[in-house]
Length: 91
Image (cartoon, rainbow, N blue to C red; front, side, top):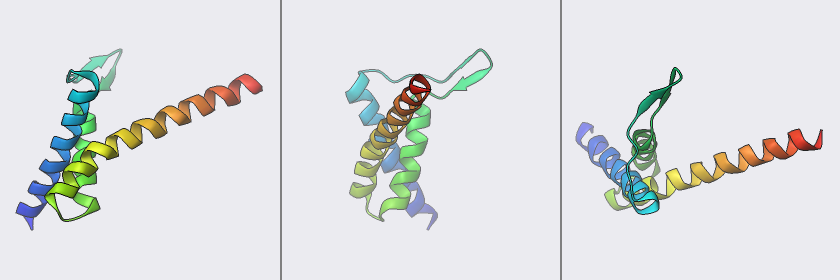
């Protein structure tokens, strides 16, 4: 069981890192700015690892889930931010 978790988490983590590299051509290192911790690529990798473990018990599916899962979360966050902006501007 622990080996399976590590394989699937690692595959999801790798998928998320590959997505960051292919999308931005860089990996952003974590940093602290104005008292806030910005995780950079590490945050996406952690999310990708957990998504890879939760989706299916196949290494290939875990890799693809890590790749696509972080992209979907980024899209949802962007939509939510734009929706909030629209709500504020109409009030």
